[in-house]
Structures are given as C-alpha cells and as structure tokens.
Length: 107
Image (tube, rainbow, N blue to C red; front, top):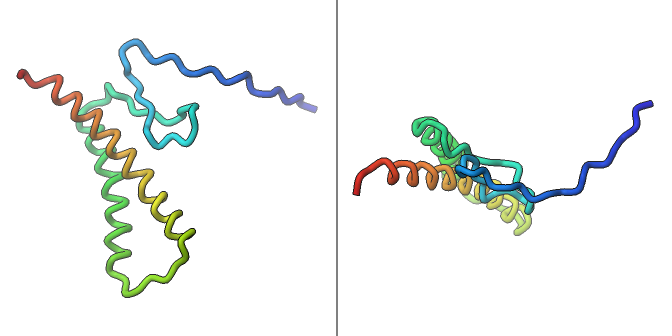
C-alpha cells in the first residue's frame, strides 16, 4: 500500500526577478496559484482579457432580457461572485497590457 506524505509547509513565493508572473487579484488565499505571464504577446493578453469580459457580459445581457428574476440574497451573492472573478481576471490582464503598451511608447 502506498504511503501518503503531507505537503511541505507553505513558503511564500519569491517574486521572479523580472516580475514575469503576476498573481491574479482573484486568488482566493494568500498562496497565489493563478498568474498572468506578463511577457506573453500583446495579442494573447488582449484575447485573454476580452474572453473573460465577454463571457460575463453575455451572461449579464441574457439575464437582463428576462422578465422578473426571483432569488434570495445568497443566490444573488453567489451570482455576483461568479461574475466578479472573471471580470477581475480580465482587468488584471488589461493592467498588464496597459503597462506593456506604456513601456513601449516614447513619452
């Protein structure tokens, strides 16, 4: 029978020297697991941000076309979180995209 070993104690990640990987704001704990590659091509960053923002937009547009929606506050809170996570991820990627574009343009 295979013996299970506990995970080693958590150690805070050391930032990469060139800040290549930026933790997403929507990470749910102090130990980030989701990151943006800040060196990804600009069109890839733009596509990633747009995909998340369009997904939430589509859900909200479909919801707005319904007549009346009855739900309790817990469901509404869960739904808001469901929309907020990909929106925040998209905004984080747009922040990286903006920083990259500003760094390229001469002032």
